[in-house]
Image 1 (cartoon, one colour):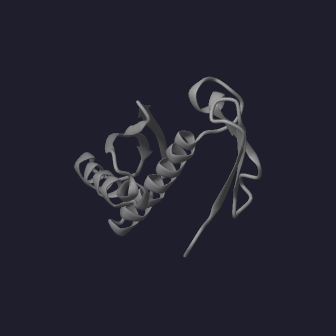
Image 2: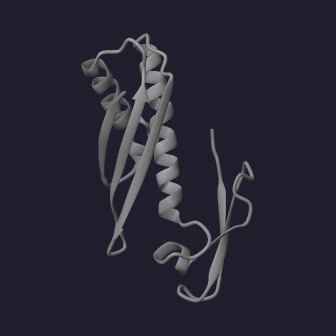
Image 3: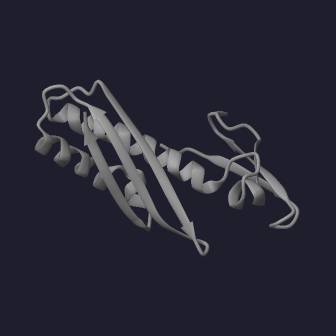
Length: 136
């Protein structure tokens, strides 16, 4: 399987702007710029997109891991915070809240750690990945 996205940029790094489009068209000429990345401008930025990808990948992987262990989650909610410092992505912090009927805290923790270690986005990120998982 292969997926693609396209970035188009016009102008200088600080004054220019660009747009992003994805194969699925979920993003279609979605604006990004210096201000949307480093200030509070309109549009998206690479770190926000990485956060969305990591949250989505981890959460889906956890659903599969739980299923393999015999559990069906009622709801899994993951927030991912990507930190960019001095031009380097330094951390990806996953915060999970989960409702999984019948699972012990120990089994839940093991499943969440498995998903953190084995989701494809965790594997591709060259940064520290942390997880704070809460079973409710």
